[in-house]
Length: 370
Image 1: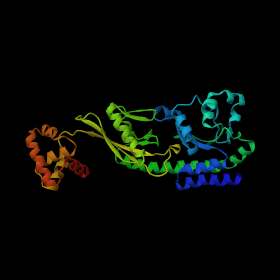
Image 2: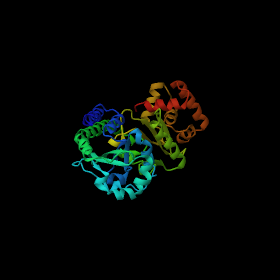
Image 3: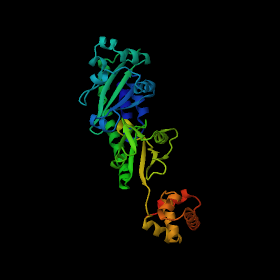
Image 4: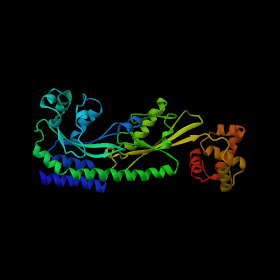
C-alpha cells in the first residue's frame, strides 16, 4: 500500500505541475488509499461569502458523483461533520471515530439515511490547503458500507504522503490564480467589466467595473447572477450556460428594455484548460459592456468616416449614429431631419462604405479608433 500511495501522491503533484485535470489523479490516489472515492471540498471565508460567493465548491471522483450531486442539491439531512470535523494544516487525516462515538454515528440521520443507502460510510479527512482569499481546501476519503473503518496503521500510511499532496494543492492554486490575474489585467486595462464563473455557473469573482452593474442591471445572490427582468434573466442564464456546455460555446445577450437609453451587452466565453473551482480558478468568463444611446454623433467619429469613405457631413453623421447602435428613426430625430431624408443619407453612406446591412456598419464603426 505504501508504494502505491507514494506513486499516487506523486501523480497528484505531477498533475499540479503540468496543469492537468486532477480528476484522474484523484481517482488513482483514492484507490491506492483503499477508498471508494474521494472529494476535494473548498469552504469559502465567511466575509467573502457574505458579499458575493457560494460557500462550497466540490471536486469528486466519478465513483461519488451521484452522491455529491444529491448532497449539493440539498437532499441530505444536516451534515454533523461540518461543525465537528475541521483538521488544521498541522494535523493529519482524522476519521469518523476521532470525532464521533459509534453510537452517535448509528443514530445520526446523515450517516444512516443519506450515506448508508448510497453505499458510503467511513471517512478520513485532512486539510491540504488554506488561503485568505479562497478559503480552506479539504481532502476527504470515503469508504463503502462493506469496507472497514480506517485503522491507525492505514492513517499513518496516508499521512506519510500528506506533505506531497499539500504541495500539489498549493502549486495548483498558485499557478491557476497567476493565470487568472494575467487574464484579468487585460480586461481591466481595456476598461471592461469582467465576471468569472465556476463549472456550475456560479460567480466566483468580478472586477470593480462589473460591481457597478450590480444593482442597476444585474442582481447577485449566493453566487447566482440574474437580471432585473424575468425575460432578461432567462436569456442571461442561457448565455452563462453556453461556455460550460458540451461543446462549450460563446454567447452574447443584450440586457435592458428595447429602445431604452442604457443597455448592457453581455458576452460569455469558456476558459479552456484545467480550471477547477476548488483551486479558486475559473471555468468561464463574461465581459459586460454598458451601452448608452449617444446624443449628437462624436465629432471625431464623424470626421473619420467622412475622410475614410468620402462621405458628406450629413451622411457621416447618420452612419456614425447607426453604427453606434441607434435606430434610423432615433438618429433622424437626434439630427432634426425627416425619416425619409435620413434613409436617403444612410443608403448613400452604405454604398460609399461598401456595407449592405446595419450589423456590418456596427462592426466597422466599433473597430474604428476615434
